[in-house]
Image (tube, helix red, strand yellow):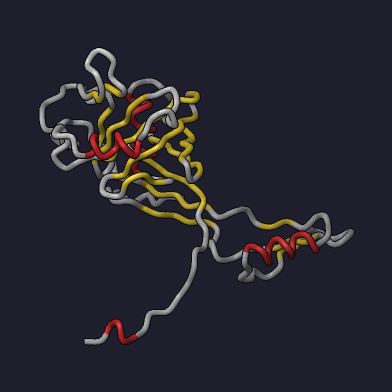
Amino acid sequence: MPSNSNSTGPVISTWPSPSRQSIMRSPPGKVTRTLRPVRLSRAAATAAAQAAEPQALVSPAPRSQVRMTTCSFDWKDIPLAEEFRDTRAIELQIGPIDDPILHSPSAVNVGNPHAIFWVDDVNAYDLAKIGPLLENHPIFPERANISLCKVASRDHLIVRTWERGAGLTRACGTAACAAAVSAARTRRANRKVTVTLPGGDLMIDWRESDDHVLMTGPCEYEFDGRFDPALFGA
C-alpha cells in the first residue's frame, strides 16, 4: 500500500513481485499449501496451472500503485497564457466559431499541463491531426497534453491522448489522472473511477483526505539484459 510519508513526490508500491508466480495445490484431504515461489515465464505458469489438479491456482497479475502529487488548477500554475478564473472550462476551440469541432476543455496540471475535451466518442476525431495543433496552441506557453474523454458512467471514463512531445500514445498515466480529476471537478464522475485507455485500464482515486491522486494498474516483467562495460569506459 502507499507510504504514509508527507512527501509530495510520486510514491510507487508494487505487489506481488512481477517476476514471480506462486503455484498452490490442494492434495485430496489436505489443506491448501503454498509451494516455494519460483521464477516462471507466462507460458510456463500457464502450463503448470493446466497440468496441476483442478484446485491449482496461479497468483493474480501483479499491480502497482503510484501516489501522484496534488494537482494545480490555477491558470498561472497550469500554466496558461492568459487568466481564467475557472479552469474547469477554458475558452478554447478548434474549428468554425459557430460549430467548433472541439471546445471548452478542462485544464489542469498533474506534474505537467493537460487539456481535457469532453466528447461522446473518443474515436470520432482525428486526434493525430488535431492533437499537435492544440498541443502547440499559444494558450499553452509550455505546450500541453491533449485528451479526449467520454464519460461512460460516474465510475468509468474512456480516454485517448495526444502526449506532449510524443504524439498518440496507448497509455498516459498523468492523462488518466487529469481526466479523472477534471471529471470529478465538473461533477461528471465520482472521485474514484476506472479509466480505459487504448492500452488498458487504470484505477484512479482522487483521495478526498489530502487531494493526492492514486493511480493503480497492472505491471508486467518486461526483460532483463546486460550492458557492455565498454559503454561506461572513459
